[in-house]
Image (tube, rainbow, N blue to C red):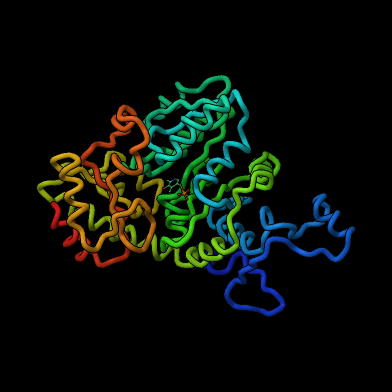
Length: 390
Ligand SMILES: *Cc1c(COP(=O)(O)O)cnc(C)c1O
């Protein structure tokens, strides 16, 4: 039914399977397991010959409702929900790759993703080559005979670099490589990577999908044969980084307002970014909706608006950046993003502190860099809060 509706309608109606009580709001099924009518039915469910719920590590109606809704919004055949964004990335690589395989990844990735690839996957003999998020030729050059996966985030965290999804999917597919895109910053309200050629979409549902900073969740989306038969669902079923029914329910309610929230986040962020550009102590502003952004044209083509994340560099390095943070009274000092409340982070000493100085320099994370995830407060109040420390 969903393909006949517009996204804001899908966000409200897809995935609803009413119980015998005919509840209007989606039911929350807090149960570990499900009861069978007979031994024969139990056997049929376990063998897969009869569809239906078995055990909430891998089947739960509330989680399924969330998966159907997000899949419809991303234009994906299937969605595999996970306990967090990181476990979505883990399920993706553990499901699809084997020892001896190779990943080419953007150098501008979420800090924990870099650690997962560098420190954990390496132990299992999966190597990663990190390349520029923006230089398509460097991806091509990094391909090895054993390369299985391209992995990127766009816009990137925190510098909002834009990777050309269509161009990179063409490079990947020519070499029989899958392209995975972490769509956390844009969400399907602003960007649809599968339509642009990506094979896999990753989400930290903790962020904008949930929208109010309450619970963690994640998702892997793509084609049925890749995710269900290809091993991602199998990894989840066996290893258990499962999205809880409660979290699925909270995130699903968040998705209902995704479009209006993303439009508001983008509008507020653009105003803040323009204002920051006019501040004498701000040396650079990184925001895809600014015409000064080095990939403004690509961003305009690829995403509906700039999104809610603005990075900016202040004069005076770490000391000056910390002063901006410590002078705020309204904006929350926290590393989360995608919340209705604005948050402010110093990437070099928080989200990107565990990667080496060398890797930080290569990724352009300077000591004076700040990242604001612009929330839904009045823009004037946010400006006043930032102005004190600037
Ligand atoms: C937060 C985040 C993640 C990790 O998600 P969790 O839900 O915190 O595990 C991955 N990618 C990006 C871009 C993120 O912002």
